[in-house]
Amino acid sequence: MLNRRVLLLTAAVGLLASEASAWPTTLVECLLRDARKLVPRSLARLIAEREKQVLEESQRFPVELSQTLALDLPTGRLAPETLSALEAHSLEVLALFKEQRVSDGLVRLGATLRIPADLSDPVLAAGPEGYPAGVAREYYAFIEANLDKLPVVLDSAAALQLPRRELPAYWQSLLARSRLEAPVLRAELFKGGRVVDHRSLDWHSPVFAVAEVAYSRAVTGVAATWLALWREARGDMTRTRKPAEILPTDRPPEGPTP
Image 1 (tube, rainbow, N blue to C red):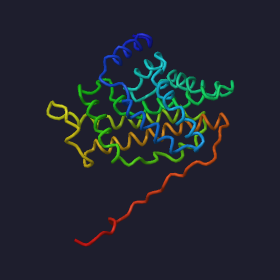
Image 2 (image 1 turned 60 degrees about the horizontal axis):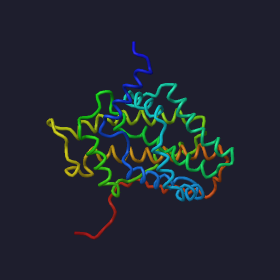
Image 3 (image 1 turned 45 degrees about the vertical axis):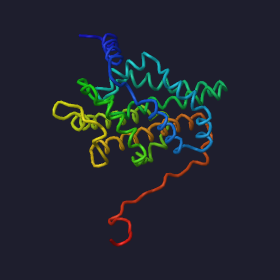
Image 4 (image 1 turned 90 degrees about the vertical axis):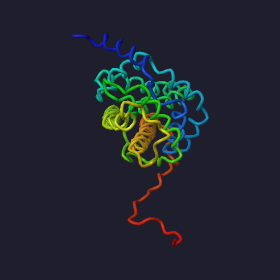
């Protein structure tokens, strides 16, 4: 039976050969921007001031951890050792704050966005068979083209109150939901043996629904991860903006009678 080390090597090769391994940089920038709206204003400002460094740091995700994730993501289940490694990676943030390396700690805190973002991406949870070539490209292109139309909603208000010790279970839940959405992308973006051009889709498409839910899940996940670590580091938790509550209505907005 192949041991985990051999499987990690196989996963690494697959990751390098894959068409897309995570959210494109432009979308990561948007995730960073939208997640800042869910945290205290002081923390949002501190991360915004270091946005360039945060984005660069997020690209320097440890290779071994990336390989471990590449092995687990297609299964929809994170192995205990993977969760331990992710938790250890996030704890490095607290160590920096404890050492009074505040600016470094803030950059590393911001860069933890990579964990919930990747776990919230149905492309990475496509299963061992992956997607036909071109599907991931069209999905990401669809999000970028329609981001201004996607209603970003709070995926879970309770997640913003999680203590740090509950993050591993929360991260697992993000991946489990992404795994459920992956087949929708395969069915909608690959038809008749051909990849569907994202420009032929609009808000009526199930792809729009997956994109909206996945993006909102990622935004909430990033904010929840930041807050759990920031709270434990005894950071400023005041002046947190309350998300606007939008209630469904049984009738459309009133307008001029045709």
